[in-house]
Image (cartoon, rainbow, N blue to C red; front, side, top):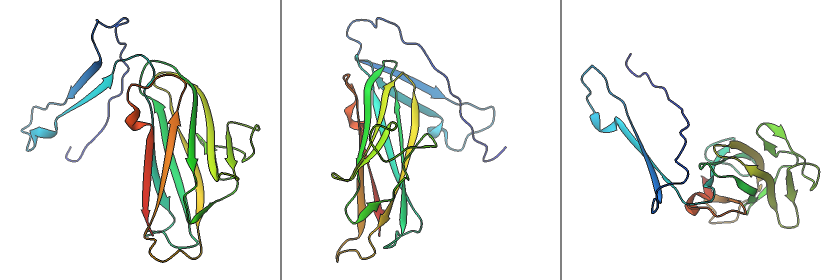
Length: 193
């Protein structure tokens, strides 16, 4: 029917060892139909993954304010999706996020995959370090294909300094193994105020 959409998910095993000199694995999906297609250019999608040793971890961040634009004194939820795009294990994985200027962390708003985390170090995987104004979540060892979501809330200052038109915030993910694609190890959300 018109407007129908969907997705197809699968997991493929990559040859181990890869042929010498292989540095990328490319996969292309294509959809076809018996009906005429008015825009055949969008029927194909290709993904290229690094094939070097290590683990390709990533973080993607979005800001979800209570209002748009975000208003002084209002709350803003940050949602961070993370994962391991490779088959290797990302060991000792940690996600960190400095609370942005002109905001304050809302106590006890840190969640990992929908489960609340305490703000204190050592109680569970998460913590809010007030001295450095930093969120830290220990994700441990992420197996190939593992992923999840971290959320937390900040409150904008009641009065923003003159000239402030946006709140920028960057999250970082790191592991103790090499990462063949480091460009996706940080993500910044920018919200207009």
